[in-house]
Image (tube, rainbow, N blue to C red):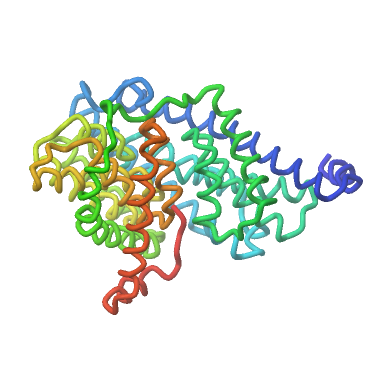
Length: 427
Protein backbone atom coordinates (compact mmCIF):
# COMPACT_ATOMS: atom_id res chain seq x y z
CA UNK A 1 0.00 0.00 0.00
CA UNK A 2 2.72 2.45 1.03
CA UNK A 3 4.87 1.52 -1.95
CA UNK A 4 1.91 2.04 -4.29
CA UNK A 5 1.20 5.47 -2.79
CA UNK A 6 4.82 6.52 -3.18
CA UNK A 7 4.86 5.36 -6.80
CA UNK A 8 1.75 7.47 -7.48
CA UNK A 9 3.30 10.53 -5.84
CA UNK A 10 6.50 10.15 -7.90
CA UNK A 11 4.46 10.99 -11.00
CA UNK A 12 3.17 14.25 -9.46
CA UNK A 13 5.19 17.49 -9.87
CA UNK A 14 7.19 18.30 -6.73
CA UNK A 15 5.54 21.62 -5.84
CA UNK A 16 2.11 20.00 -6.10
CA UNK A 17 3.31 17.16 -3.84
CA UNK A 18 4.37 19.77 -1.28
CA UNK A 19 0.96 21.43 -1.57
CA UNK A 20 -0.79 18.08 -1.01
CA UNK A 21 1.46 17.38 1.99
CA UNK A 22 0.58 20.61 3.80
CA UNK A 23 -3.15 20.06 3.15
CA UNK A 24 -2.91 16.50 4.49
CA UNK A 25 -1.00 17.84 7.48
CA UNK A 26 -3.78 20.31 8.20
CA UNK A 27 -6.46 17.62 7.98
CA UNK A 28 -4.58 15.22 10.26
CA UNK A 29 -3.80 17.95 12.81
CA UNK A 30 -7.42 19.09 12.83
CA UNK A 31 -8.68 15.55 13.44
CA UNK A 32 -6.04 15.10 16.16
CA UNK A 33 -7.27 18.29 17.80
CA UNK A 34 -10.82 16.89 17.86
CA UNK A 35 -9.58 13.64 19.41
CA UNK A 36 -7.64 15.49 22.12
CA UNK A 37 -10.64 17.74 22.80
CA UNK A 38 -12.88 14.75 23.50
CA UNK A 39 -10.15 12.97 25.45
CA UNK A 40 -9.75 15.98 27.75
CA UNK A 41 -13.51 16.12 28.31
CA UNK A 42 -13.62 12.41 29.20
CA UNK A 43 -10.69 12.60 31.64
CA UNK A 44 -12.03 15.75 33.33
CA UNK A 45 -15.48 14.20 33.67
CA UNK A 46 -14.00 11.08 35.26
CA UNK A 47 -11.77 13.09 37.59
CA UNK A 48 -14.06 15.98 38.56
CA UNK A 49 -17.52 15.10 37.27
CA UNK A 50 -17.51 18.01 34.79
CA UNK A 51 -15.42 19.51 32.00
CA UNK A 52 -13.76 22.91 31.63
CA UNK A 53 -15.60 23.22 28.31
CA UNK A 54 -18.90 23.38 30.21
CA UNK A 55 -17.86 25.00 33.49
CA UNK A 56 -16.01 28.22 34.30
CA UNK A 57 -14.20 26.58 37.22
CA UNK A 58 -13.52 22.88 36.86
CA UNK A 59 -13.07 22.18 40.59
CA UNK A 60 -16.06 24.15 41.92
CA UNK A 61 -18.46 21.88 43.80
CA UNK A 62 -15.96 19.01 43.78
CA UNK A 63 -14.96 17.54 47.14
CA UNK A 64 -11.36 17.77 48.32
CA UNK A 65 -11.17 13.99 48.62
CA UNK A 66 -12.15 13.52 44.97
CA UNK A 67 -9.61 16.13 43.85
CA UNK A 68 -6.92 14.51 46.00
CA UNK A 69 -7.68 11.01 44.70
CA UNK A 70 -7.54 12.23 41.11
CA UNK A 71 -4.16 13.88 41.64
CA UNK A 72 -2.72 10.81 43.36
CA UNK A 73 -3.87 8.52 40.53
CA UNK A 74 -2.51 10.89 37.88
CA UNK A 75 0.79 11.24 39.74
CA UNK A 76 1.30 7.49 40.07
CA UNK A 77 0.14 6.81 36.52
CA UNK A 78 2.34 9.54 35.06
CA UNK A 79 5.43 8.28 36.87
CA UNK A 80 4.92 4.76 35.50
CA UNK A 81 4.06 5.89 31.97
CA UNK A 82 7.00 8.27 31.55
CA UNK A 83 9.42 5.86 33.24
CA UNK A 84 8.64 3.00 30.87
CA UNK A 85 8.40 5.25 27.80
CA UNK A 86 11.95 6.48 28.44
CA UNK A 87 13.45 3.28 29.80
CA UNK A 88 15.00 2.07 26.55
CA UNK A 89 14.52 4.93 24.13
CA UNK A 90 14.45 8.70 23.90
CA UNK A 91 11.49 11.06 23.65
CA UNK A 92 12.19 13.70 21.03
CA UNK A 93 11.07 17.30 21.38
CA UNK A 94 9.88 19.20 18.31
CA UNK A 95 13.11 21.15 18.01
CA UNK A 96 15.18 18.00 18.46
CA UNK A 97 13.33 16.37 15.57
CA UNK A 98 13.94 19.42 13.39
CA UNK A 99 17.64 19.71 14.24
CA UNK A 100 18.53 16.02 14.08
CA UNK A 101 17.80 14.65 10.61
CA UNK A 102 18.32 11.10 11.87
CA UNK A 103 15.68 11.50 14.61
CA UNK A 104 12.90 10.46 12.21
CA UNK A 105 14.58 7.07 11.86
CA UNK A 106 15.19 6.70 15.61
CA UNK A 107 11.77 7.97 16.68
CA UNK A 108 9.29 5.30 17.79
CA UNK A 109 5.94 6.50 16.40
CA UNK A 110 3.58 4.84 18.89
CA UNK A 111 5.77 5.63 21.90
CA UNK A 112 6.00 9.28 20.89
CA UNK A 113 2.25 9.41 20.22
CA UNK A 114 1.35 7.91 23.61
CA UNK A 115 3.73 10.34 25.30
CA UNK A 116 1.80 13.27 23.81
CA UNK A 117 -1.61 11.76 24.55
CA UNK A 118 -0.65 11.20 28.18
CA UNK A 119 0.07 14.90 28.60
CA UNK A 120 -3.62 15.59 27.92
CA UNK A 121 -4.63 12.87 30.39
CA UNK A 122 -2.35 14.38 33.05
CA UNK A 123 -3.67 17.92 32.54
CA UNK A 124 -7.26 16.64 32.52
CA UNK A 125 -6.59 14.95 35.85
CA UNK A 126 -5.28 18.17 37.41
CA UNK A 127 -1.59 18.50 36.48
CA UNK A 128 -0.73 22.24 36.71
CA UNK A 129 0.93 22.51 33.30
CA UNK A 130 -0.20 23.48 29.82
CA UNK A 131 -1.96 21.16 27.38
CA UNK A 132 -0.79 22.98 24.24
CA UNK A 133 2.43 20.98 23.78
CA UNK A 134 0.56 17.75 23.01
CA UNK A 135 -1.30 18.84 19.84
CA UNK A 136 1.86 20.49 18.51
CA UNK A 137 3.84 17.32 19.11
CA UNK A 138 1.20 15.10 17.53
CA UNK A 139 1.12 17.34 14.47
CA UNK A 140 4.88 16.92 14.21
CA UNK A 141 4.68 13.15 14.70
CA UNK A 142 2.35 12.73 11.72
CA UNK A 143 4.39 15.14 9.59
CA UNK A 144 7.18 12.57 9.33
CA UNK A 145 5.13 9.83 7.59
CA UNK A 146 3.31 12.40 5.43
CA UNK A 147 6.64 13.81 4.23
CA UNK A 148 7.89 10.32 3.37
CA UNK A 149 4.73 9.32 1.52
CA UNK A 150 4.81 12.54 -0.52
CA UNK A 151 8.54 11.98 -1.20
CA UNK A 152 9.62 15.41 0.00
CA UNK A 153 13.22 16.49 0.30
CA UNK A 154 14.77 16.41 3.77
CA UNK A 155 14.64 20.22 3.90
CA UNK A 156 10.90 20.24 3.19
CA UNK A 157 10.27 17.34 5.59
CA UNK A 158 11.77 19.47 8.35
CA UNK A 159 9.60 22.38 7.18
CA UNK A 160 6.56 20.08 7.34
CA UNK A 161 7.43 19.23 10.96
CA UNK A 162 7.14 22.94 11.76
CA UNK A 163 3.85 23.11 9.84
CA UNK A 164 2.56 20.25 12.00
CA UNK A 165 3.45 22.09 15.20
CA UNK A 166 1.65 25.22 14.02
CA UNK A 167 -1.37 23.27 12.81
CA UNK A 168 -1.69 21.52 16.17
CA UNK A 169 -1.70 24.83 18.03
CA UNK A 170 -4.21 26.28 15.56
CA UNK A 171 -6.56 23.33 15.99
CA UNK A 172 -6.93 23.39 19.78
CA UNK A 173 -7.07 27.17 20.21
CA UNK A 174 -8.67 28.14 16.87
CA UNK A 175 -5.94 30.70 16.14
CA UNK A 176 -4.78 30.04 12.54
CA UNK A 177 -3.02 33.34 11.80
CA UNK A 178 -1.33 33.48 15.20
CA UNK A 179 -0.08 29.93 14.65
CA UNK A 180 1.57 30.98 11.39
CA UNK A 181 3.61 33.61 13.23
CA UNK A 182 4.28 31.08 16.01
CA UNK A 183 6.02 28.77 13.52
CA UNK A 184 8.37 31.46 12.25
CA UNK A 185 9.01 33.11 15.63
CA UNK A 186 9.71 30.01 17.73
CA UNK A 187 10.92 27.25 15.41
CA UNK A 188 13.69 29.02 13.52
CA UNK A 189 12.08 28.62 10.09
CA UNK A 190 13.34 31.15 7.53
CA UNK A 191 10.54 33.42 6.37
CA UNK A 192 9.52 33.57 2.71
CA UNK A 193 6.24 34.30 0.94
CA UNK A 194 5.98 30.69 -0.24
CA UNK A 195 6.50 29.28 3.24
CA UNK A 196 4.18 31.81 4.83
CA UNK A 197 1.40 30.75 2.43
CA UNK A 198 2.06 27.03 2.97
CA UNK A 199 2.06 27.34 6.77
CA UNK A 200 -1.12 29.39 6.50
CA UNK A 201 -2.78 26.69 4.40
CA UNK A 202 -1.91 24.10 7.04
CA UNK A 203 -3.14 26.14 10.00
CA UNK A 204 -6.36 27.29 8.36
CA UNK A 205 -7.26 23.77 7.18
CA UNK A 206 -6.50 22.45 10.67
CA UNK A 207 -8.60 25.19 12.29
CA UNK A 208 -11.50 24.52 9.93
CA UNK A 209 -11.47 20.75 10.55
CA UNK A 210 -11.16 21.10 14.34
CA UNK A 211 -13.82 23.82 14.27
CA UNK A 212 -16.44 21.18 13.55
CA UNK A 213 -16.19 20.37 17.27
CA UNK A 214 -13.97 22.94 19.00
CA UNK A 215 -15.59 26.33 19.60
CA UNK A 216 -13.87 29.52 18.47
CA UNK A 217 -15.43 31.47 21.35
CA UNK A 218 -13.15 33.25 23.82
CA UNK A 219 -11.74 31.06 26.59
CA UNK A 220 -12.02 33.80 29.22
CA UNK A 221 -14.94 35.96 30.27
CA UNK A 222 -13.87 39.59 30.49
CA UNK A 223 -15.94 42.75 30.99
CA UNK A 224 -16.28 45.33 28.23
CA UNK A 225 -12.98 47.14 27.73
CA UNK A 226 -12.27 50.64 26.49
CA UNK A 227 -8.69 51.28 25.41
CA UNK A 228 -7.29 54.78 25.77
CA UNK A 229 -3.97 56.54 25.29
CA UNK A 230 -4.29 57.62 28.93
CA UNK A 231 -3.38 54.03 29.88
CA UNK A 232 0.04 54.12 28.22
CA UNK A 233 1.72 55.29 31.43
CA UNK A 234 1.21 51.87 33.02
CA UNK A 235 3.18 50.04 30.31
CA UNK A 236 6.71 51.05 31.52
CA UNK A 237 5.80 50.06 35.08
CA UNK A 238 4.47 46.68 33.92
CA UNK A 239 7.63 46.09 31.91
CA UNK A 240 9.91 46.90 34.84
CA UNK A 241 7.88 44.78 37.26
CA UNK A 242 6.90 41.77 35.15
CA UNK A 243 9.64 41.28 32.56
CA UNK A 244 12.35 40.21 35.06
CA UNK A 245 9.87 37.82 36.70
CA UNK A 246 8.85 36.36 33.34
CA UNK A 247 12.50 36.10 32.29
CA UNK A 248 13.35 34.25 35.51
CA UNK A 249 10.38 31.90 35.14
CA UNK A 250 11.32 31.19 31.52
CA UNK A 251 14.90 30.40 32.44
CA UNK A 252 13.93 28.22 35.39
CA UNK A 253 11.34 26.30 33.37
CA UNK A 254 13.94 25.57 30.67
CA UNK A 255 16.41 24.50 33.35
CA UNK A 256 13.78 22.26 34.97
CA UNK A 257 12.98 20.66 31.61
CA UNK A 258 16.65 20.20 30.70
CA UNK A 259 17.28 18.52 34.06
CA UNK A 260 14.01 16.59 34.11
CA UNK A 261 14.23 13.29 36.00
CA UNK A 262 13.82 10.39 33.58
CA UNK A 263 15.33 7.37 35.33
CA UNK A 264 13.81 5.20 38.06
CA UNK A 265 13.88 8.14 40.49
CA UNK A 266 10.79 9.43 38.66
CA UNK A 267 8.80 6.69 40.42
CA UNK A 268 9.39 8.63 43.65
CA UNK A 269 9.72 12.26 42.57
CA UNK A 270 6.62 12.60 40.39
CA UNK A 271 4.13 11.03 42.86
CA UNK A 272 5.72 13.15 45.61
CA UNK A 273 5.24 16.29 43.52
CA UNK A 274 1.57 15.43 43.03
CA UNK A 275 1.19 14.78 46.77
CA UNK A 276 2.54 18.28 47.37
CA UNK A 277 -0.08 19.51 44.91
CA UNK A 278 -2.80 17.64 46.82
CA UNK A 279 -1.89 19.62 49.94
CA UNK A 280 -2.11 22.92 48.07
CA UNK A 281 -5.31 22.03 46.23
CA UNK A 282 -7.37 21.90 49.41
CA UNK A 283 -6.85 25.65 49.85
CA UNK A 284 -6.11 26.69 46.25
CA UNK A 285 -7.99 24.36 43.89
CA UNK A 286 -7.68 26.86 41.04
CA UNK A 287 -3.95 26.14 40.87
CA UNK A 288 -4.83 22.89 39.12
CA UNK A 289 -4.95 22.52 35.37
CA UNK A 290 -3.31 24.62 32.71
CA UNK A 291 -3.90 28.01 34.37
CA UNK A 292 -7.33 28.78 32.96
CA UNK A 293 -9.06 28.70 36.37
CA UNK A 294 -6.39 30.86 37.97
CA UNK A 295 -6.59 33.49 35.21
CA UNK A 296 -10.39 33.59 35.38
CA UNK A 297 -10.29 34.00 39.16
CA UNK A 298 -7.95 36.97 38.78
CA UNK A 299 -10.26 38.46 36.13
CA UNK A 300 -13.25 38.01 38.43
CA UNK A 301 -11.44 39.83 41.23
CA UNK A 302 -9.49 38.36 44.17
CA UNK A 303 -7.82 39.73 47.27
CA UNK A 304 -4.21 40.84 47.10
CA UNK A 305 -3.11 38.02 49.42
CA UNK A 306 -4.83 35.38 47.29
CA UNK A 307 -3.35 36.71 44.05
CA UNK A 308 0.14 36.90 45.56
CA UNK A 309 -0.03 33.33 46.85
CA UNK A 310 -1.42 31.98 43.58
CA UNK A 311 1.27 33.77 41.56
CA UNK A 312 4.06 32.31 43.68
CA UNK A 313 2.56 28.83 44.09
CA UNK A 314 1.61 28.42 40.42
CA UNK A 315 5.16 29.18 39.33
CA UNK A 316 6.57 26.81 41.96
CA UNK A 317 4.30 23.86 41.15
CA UNK A 318 4.92 24.18 37.40
CA UNK A 319 8.69 24.11 37.96
CA UNK A 320 8.52 21.23 40.45
CA UNK A 321 6.26 19.11 38.23
CA UNK A 322 8.52 19.62 35.20
CA UNK A 323 11.66 18.81 37.16
CA UNK A 324 10.04 15.79 38.82
CA UNK A 325 9.49 14.15 35.42
CA UNK A 326 6.27 15.44 33.86
CA UNK A 327 5.96 16.85 30.36
CA UNK A 328 3.70 19.69 29.30
CA UNK A 329 3.52 23.28 28.17
CA UNK A 330 4.08 26.60 29.89
CA UNK A 331 2.06 28.76 27.50
CA UNK A 332 -1.21 28.97 29.41
CA UNK A 333 0.50 29.00 32.83
CA UNK A 334 2.51 32.01 31.58
CA UNK A 335 -0.71 33.73 30.51
CA UNK A 336 -2.15 33.21 34.01
CA UNK A 337 1.05 34.29 35.76
CA UNK A 338 1.20 37.49 33.71
CA UNK A 339 -2.36 38.31 34.62
CA UNK A 340 -1.75 37.64 38.32
CA UNK A 341 1.46 39.68 38.31
CA UNK A 342 -0.31 42.61 36.67
CA UNK A 343 -3.10 42.35 39.25
CA UNK A 344 -0.51 42.64 42.02
CA UNK A 345 0.99 45.74 40.46
CA UNK A 346 -2.47 47.19 39.94
CA UNK A 347 -3.30 46.69 43.61
CA UNK A 348 -0.04 48.34 44.64
CA UNK A 349 -0.89 51.34 42.46
CA UNK A 350 -4.54 51.36 43.54
CA UNK A 351 -5.97 50.52 40.10
CA UNK A 352 -8.45 47.87 41.31
CA UNK A 353 -7.27 45.26 38.78
CA UNK A 354 -8.47 46.99 35.62
CA UNK A 355 -8.93 44.46 32.82
CA UNK A 356 -6.68 46.44 30.49
CA UNK A 357 -3.82 46.20 32.98
CA UNK A 358 -4.34 42.45 33.40
CA UNK A 359 -4.27 41.84 29.65
CA UNK A 360 -1.17 43.98 29.18
CA UNK A 361 0.46 41.93 31.94
CA UNK A 362 -0.46 38.64 30.29
CA UNK A 363 0.99 39.67 26.91
CA UNK A 364 4.14 40.96 28.61
CA UNK A 365 4.75 37.70 30.47
CA UNK A 366 3.83 35.51 27.50
CA UNK A 367 6.03 37.45 25.08
CA UNK A 368 9.04 36.87 27.32
CA UNK A 369 8.50 33.16 28.02
CA UNK A 370 7.64 32.35 24.40
CA UNK A 371 10.21 34.79 22.98
CA UNK A 372 7.56 35.50 20.35
CA UNK A 373 5.89 38.93 20.66
CA UNK A 374 3.57 38.64 17.65
CA UNK A 375 2.41 35.17 18.70
CA UNK A 376 1.89 36.33 22.28
CA UNK A 377 -0.26 39.21 21.09
CA UNK A 378 -2.34 36.97 18.85
CA UNK A 379 -2.84 34.40 21.60
CA UNK A 380 -4.04 37.00 24.11
CA UNK A 381 -6.52 38.35 21.56
CA UNK A 382 -7.62 34.82 20.66
CA UNK A 383 -8.01 33.71 24.29
CA UNK A 384 -10.05 36.75 25.31
CA UNK A 385 -11.92 37.73 22.14
CA UNK A 386 -10.57 41.30 22.18
CA UNK A 387 -11.37 43.72 19.38
CA UNK A 388 -8.79 45.00 16.93
CA UNK A 389 -8.45 48.30 18.83
CA UNK A 390 -6.47 46.42 21.49
CA UNK A 391 -3.78 45.44 18.97
CA UNK A 392 -1.49 48.52 19.19
CA UNK A 393 -1.38 48.46 23.01
CA UNK A 394 -0.71 44.72 23.22
CA UNK A 395 1.80 44.68 20.38
CA UNK A 396 3.85 47.58 21.76
CA UNK A 397 3.92 45.96 25.21
CA UNK A 398 4.90 42.59 23.74
CA UNK A 399 7.80 43.96 21.68
CA UNK A 400 9.12 46.13 24.51
CA UNK A 401 9.02 43.15 26.90
CA UNK A 402 10.75 40.97 24.31
CA UNK A 403 13.54 43.54 23.84
CA UNK A 404 13.90 43.99 27.60
CA UNK A 405 14.25 40.21 28.01
CA UNK A 406 17.02 40.17 25.40
CA UNK A 407 18.80 42.85 27.43
CA UNK A 408 18.52 40.66 30.53
CA UNK A 409 20.08 37.79 28.56
CA UNK A 410 23.27 39.83 28.20
CA UNK A 411 23.79 40.35 31.94
CA UNK A 412 26.79 38.35 33.30
CA UNK A 413 24.76 36.73 36.07
CA UNK A 414 22.33 35.41 33.47
CA UNK A 415 24.97 32.97 32.19
CA UNK A 416 24.48 30.79 35.26
CA UNK A 417 20.92 29.95 34.28
CA UNK A 418 21.81 29.84 30.59
CA UNK A 419 24.28 27.02 31.25
CA UNK A 420 21.50 24.98 32.83
CA UNK A 421 19.23 25.31 29.83
CA UNK A 422 21.52 24.62 26.87
CA UNK A 423 19.30 21.84 25.62
CA UNK A 424 16.32 24.03 24.88
CA UNK A 425 12.98 22.26 24.65
CA UNK A 426 9.98 23.87 22.88
CA UNK A 427 6.93 23.98 25.10
